[in-house]
Amino acid sequence: MGGCCNNIEQSSGFSSILNGGCNVVTGHSNNVLNGCCNAISVHTSTYGYFNSIANGCENRIIDLTECRSIYNFIGSGANNSICSCYCNTEGSFIGSGDFNIINDGFQGFIGTGRSNSICCSVNSSIVGGQYNKIDNGSNGSFIGGGGSFHYLFSEGNCINSFSSYGVIGGGMLNQIGGTCTSSGYCSTFGFIGGGLKNLIDSGNTAAPGQYSSCFGVIGGGCCNVICQNTCFSSILGDACNVVSHNFASASGYNIASVSDCAFHANNFVAQNMPAVPGVPGTLYCSAYYAPLGGYVVMIS
Image 1 (cartoon, rainbow, N blue to C red):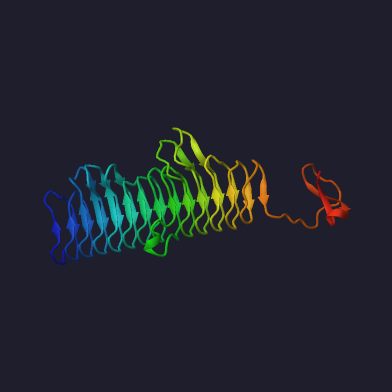
Image 2 (image 1 turned 120 degrees about the horizontal axis):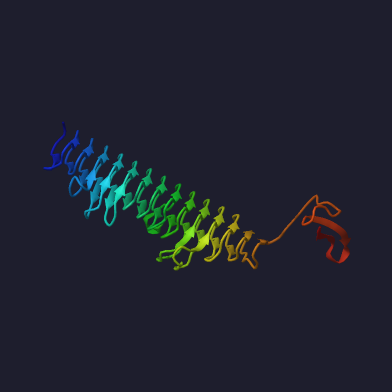
């Protein structure tokens, strides 16, 4: 309808370019509304249709093989890409930002930011931030924001391969999953709220249908680790803590877990404790013990 040097290739039925310059459209019922040098490039109408780019510059919706690329949308920004390389890309969305990419993703979502990526995952989302990544097979995963403030730290926050249903709220250089390449679920339902360089590890192997780590929680802090083959464990925050036992928790500095089903801390201070036994399993304060200079804590 308007613009300059736009091109709708032959056999591209019901496709349109409304404005802008140097935009290119192929395939069936694909649309570029405005902007410059945007491209929707699919092999045939069989494999790519109902894709749209609203605005921006040098954004791409493409298929590099004869995989389906349908119902995808890029709102604006620059150098954003939705690609089909090895499998279908359907219903994915990039709102804005630059150099964001969804590669072989089903209903993937990137809101904005820079150099965020989702690869070969189903129903995964990155809201914003920089250099955040959801990798191969990490279905249903979520990164809220954060990442890296500089290209030298180009990994950002990362949910690694086969780490399904992981959540990283924000922070910088946090990771869920290891270098797993097997067909098992290397890490599932991991949660990192924020902080710096926290890790829920999964090692590099997991048997088919099994989990290397699951339901790990790191609230925040710095350089905390939940080790592989560990489930239902948590680190509340603080720094340099390591939990390698199941159903174990830690809070403090430089703590290493020693037992399953235990809470680990540098010190434990309890005030206003009852002086007599109560419900079985609860703590109470016994008689004053002079050599220790304090009261003895007992378990009912």
